[in-house]
Image 1 (cartoon, rainbow, N blue to C red):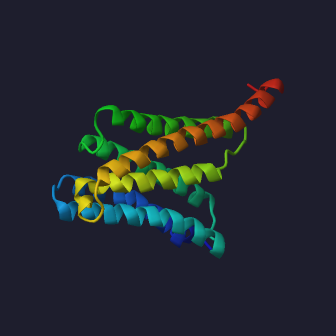
Image 2 (cartoon, rainbow, N blue to C red):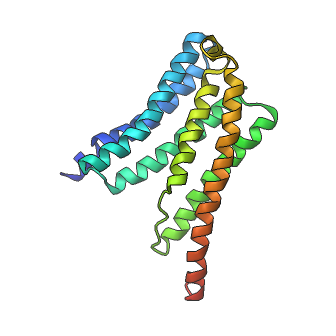
Image 3 (cartoon, rainbow, N blue to C red):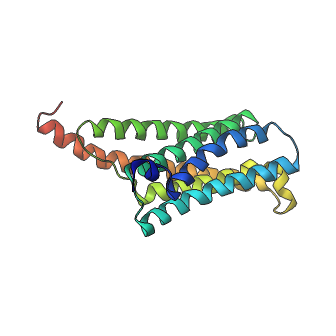
Length: 197
């Protein structure tokens, strides 16, 4: 398979889809009303489903590539980061609820920086199972907040449910971040002992 065809295999196309969802969601947030809110949730849910499918398809069909690994991680962070900004910008999360958003964003920046630093010493920081569960809970929590009060049509107290899940997602974010740092610190100490600076 040529490099060009690998770039456009199904798993990678699903990653491109997650990135393409961001401007669609942004536009939909500007339209107030039940139709736009539910459509936004539908688009967001498809993006979340694509995250699950791309890994499954890549493993089962042998279409795992370096580009795919980069796109998978990057598209997830882009979608989560953009969604958090939109939720704050359009008052789905206000006041003290902005703090968890900052925690999640800073954690993602920190881990990205950690991976870049470790790569300088040819050390790969793999995505942990805890990190994958963290992302799943984040996406699930944000889905309730994306639809907002319009979700009460089917499930009462939609926003409250979303906020409770968001707290849980933030806790998972901190735990997984600490887990990454704990493992990386062992490598950093080893490299420092070997005199690698």
